[in-house]
Length: 304
Image 1 (cartoon, rainbow, N blue to C red):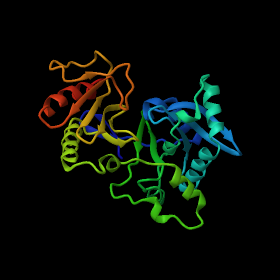
Image 2: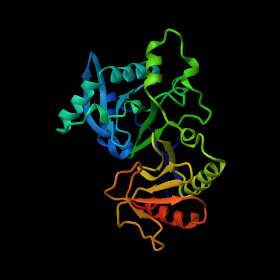
Image 3: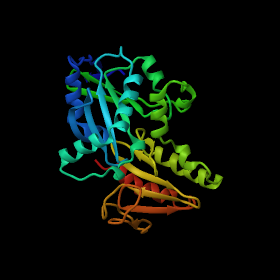
Image 4: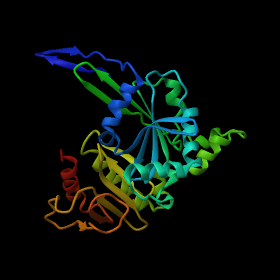
């Protein structure tokens, strides 16, 4: 990515300013962790069983622990280290719970955690093609994030997306690869197809109609499948789709009283348990209110 600043009608290229130390990269990322990832920082430099974890975080939405590691260069293997860390979390669950409870003075229970949503994030100014290809499996809970620093105090953040045709890691499991087998059997990376599997063609087409309409609202909306719903987000969730047999529940990520809904199409679910984020839900069975629902969603997309 090339960045420029304008000087009257001229474009002047901004030069990248490499991070001098991995710690410098870590400080920038940790200081802005929630804004960048929606993750909750538990501890920096967490040591367990001779492993030193750069950043230990928690995903409140998925109810899962996340390990974040920083790489200033792109010369090392991320897959081997990522699998080792995933196994570490699965083998020493109690230690991670204790660290969370001591940090926040809470009583998080083992049963409250979805260990299948455990994942590892690698953060670096750049990854080589081998690293990108090695992690390009739809069901491998390892993510790559590129963070670059430029003159003028400009930072770019780019989570590397896995290709739509990414294969399953199960295809590469060797007979002796016990660490990988354990990770694959105990973790689960959800994709849209998991929620659409077994649903009627009517429901699938209805989902696609609303999906395309939402993606057309802004160029930077991402789709991320969770265990119980499909999330559409920018910096944070905008709407969540809960795919059902006879229809779709659309959860709007907004607080009660913050949406202008003259037709009273939304239902207030504040204070009630549910899968999606936000206080509003709309039950949809056709596209008759598609344009009006986009009017409601725009209010969330356009919020600062």
